[in-house]
Length: 87
Image 1 (cartoon, rainbow, N blue to C red):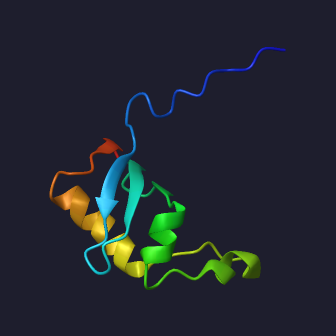
Image 2 (cartoon, rainbow, N blue to C red):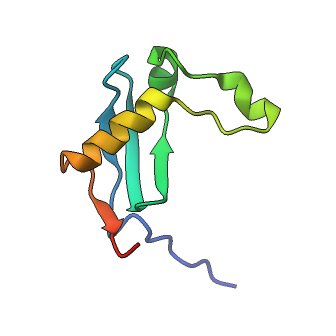
């Protein structure tokens, strides 16, 4: 059995996005208007003032509303492209 190459980032790489509230920096990718991929590293989670690391253990995905707003603003400002704008 062969392993298929993962080429999802070929048409839209991750881009750095800084939080307008605390300054934490993540890598983000907008696959569509509805789907966002965010990579947090140790520095970003330590910097974020809203990060709740325990939420993942309670069955919730850790979310920072300020970062969500910063990512949306990066799209509006043209700093984070949306790969598929059809929907």
